Image 1: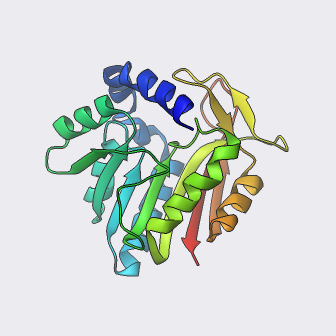
Image 2: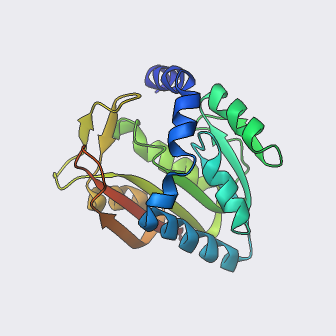
Length: 209
């Protein structure tokens, strides 16, 4: 797991300013994703535990959005350069460097986890460990919103992402992996993206049993 993560970290370290400029206002043109995040925030507030981790937070724009939606949000990212940018862009919020398979969060602590396209570079065989770690930090009834590239193919499809190799997933297959981690998917949204890549945009909302 360490080798591909080191490569991904180095790749994102090298594109911080470009990435941040491209994605800072991206959700303004993505109403489906924006509203799924809004629904996630509302449901997390309803649990009575507003503490949320934005896992794979990048430049911190979605951590700030979660904060604006009334959550006690903090960001975690593999890339130290991304974390440094997030801290400078959002000095009132907390950001730390972390690997997704070893989150620096105590057991059963969070009302929610947001993983917005942050697991797309994970090889399929390593994904269950990441989902189990996200389940570990959720309180009972806590929520996970995961977004990824979807495919109609029967198995995950590896493709050349602009930053690092990535994978698209069949939504049913991803939901099965969530179930294996103790997370029950209760809402999903699949839609065609405005992208030349041709994959679906997929959003699954799951609750820890």
